[in-house]
Length: 251
Image (tube, rainbow, N blue to C red; front, side, top):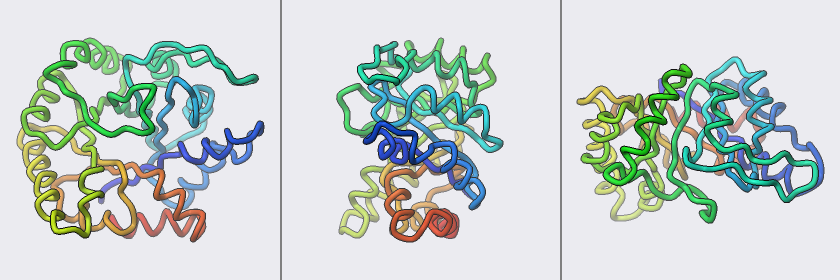
C-alpha cells in the first residue's frame, strides 16, 4: 500500500494568523497518526509563514512515524520579523538538528506561493551532490522534487537521490479534462523510468479525494504521497479522522 503522509503546513498557517499556539501542530500530528496516517510532512520556508523551525524540532521529538521535511537546500538563515518567533536557521541546519527519516529537497524560492516545479538537475545537480552526501551521512533518506521528465529522473539517480517526488500539479490541473489521459501517461512513463533505475517514487501537490485514486492505481510502485492543502479543507468539512481514513481508502 502507498503510504500517506499528511502535510501540516496549513494547520500552522491558521495558527500563525493569530498570536497563539492554537491550533497546535504537534496535537494535529498526533491526531493524524492516531487516525492511520503513515507519516507527517512539513515544509519550513525562510519567512516561516506556516511551519516554523521550532515546529520541526517539536515534531522530531514526538513522532514515532516517518517524518518528512521538505525545503530548499540552499535556503540561508533569515531574521524573523515577528515578535516571539525564532529566526530561521537555514534549511540544512534544521535537518542537521532533527535528522528526519526523509528530506525532500525542493527548488522553491522565497517569493513562490507554493512549490510549482521540479529541479533542473543539468543546472543544480553539481550543487546538490555534496548536500545529498551529507544527508546520507546523517542517516537521512533523500528525495528530490521532480517533474516527470526522463532525462531529469535519470540524473537524480546519478547524483545519489534515494527517491524522487513527482510534482503532480499538472496531473491535478488536467484531471477530468480531455488532456487527463495524456498527462497521466507522462507520470506512468516516469514511474517506469524510476523503477528501471532503482529509484523510489513519491508524489505530491494538489492531490485530493477526487483525483488520488486514479493516480495511485495507475502509477507504478508509488511508495508515498504527501497531501496537505486538500486534506485540511476536507478535515474542516468531514472531520480529521474521517478525512485521513478517506485518503487511506483512495490508496
